[in-house]
Image (cartoon, rainbow, N blue to C red; front, side):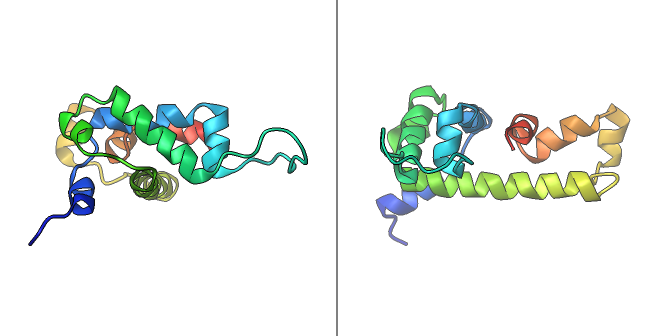
Length: 136
C-alpha cells in the first residue's frame, strides 16, 4: 500500500498530553467559534470566525504545545483537527452516556481491587472528561 501524506496524517494518534485540545476549547472565543454561541447575529463589527479557521488555530496550538515528536513532523491542517475533534467528541459522548446509564461502568475486578473511583474510570475512558463535561 502506498502511503500518501493524507494517510500519514491520519496514522499518527494523539498522545495523552495532546488531549489538551480541551484546554484550547476552554477559551470562550474558541469554543464559540467551534460550537457556535447563543448570541444574536451581529450586523456590524468584526466578522465571525469560520470553523475551519478556528481548527487551523487549534492545529497550530497543538503543534506548538505537543511533546509528541511524530505529531510535529507532519503538517496538521484544520481539516485534520476537525476530524480529530469529532473523534474526541464521539468518545466523550459515549463516556457521558455510559456515566448516565451504566451502574458499574464496566469496572474490572482488578480495578475494583485497586479501589479505582468512578471519576478516574471516566478519565480513563475519555481523557479530560471532567474538563469537557463542564464546558457543555
